[in-house]
Image (tube, rainbow, N blue to C red; front, side):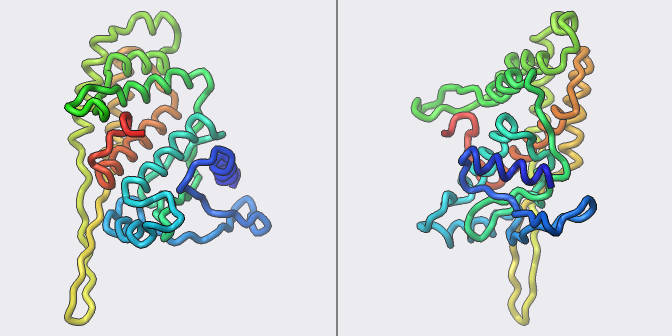
Length: 266
């Protein structure tokens, strides 16, 4: 209940658009029971349903005109919560992010949250910047993005080094090469397509959605921790939670907005 109320307060205070969370009915809540608003929606991986939703609300008073904008609203809200809220949602699998009939995205189930220590804020900003480094394209007004692995390595050292001696001992170039190999393997993880058929009389309808391999994401987070261990770095629990959520959003980008350059687009 505390985490849900904190997120709702953050949404209201920050002015983020296209995002909500259930209203809790505190008079009916206890230590073991939480009663809240029922929200009807579809998972963020159901591309066909989200296309239908955004087509139906297009032209009305909504911030989401297509699936890409649904994703951008969710990503902006989540990323903002990392730095501006009391905590960030640390379990953003598709069942906890629902596209609502009005085009908004609902964050639900705040049972797992993370908190970023103020001492690592600067390093985290550098880390996110390294993942959206701008590179030149044929269209100078719309650069593409690439990962700056040396900048990433330096920010991860700042997050994971237990003392100055450990930080000074890390070979940044070698660490950057290991990170590039690790992220190349993560890029190879593609969402899978699930087709559901619904037979009604003589007609049969099929709807396709895409799913994310959570086990593969867990392995990726573990591999990052192992790579850090190789250089004497110990990442805090919250960092592992943060990385896993970022990987979820990377999968959602591939599903809803495969052409979106997160670091380059406004």
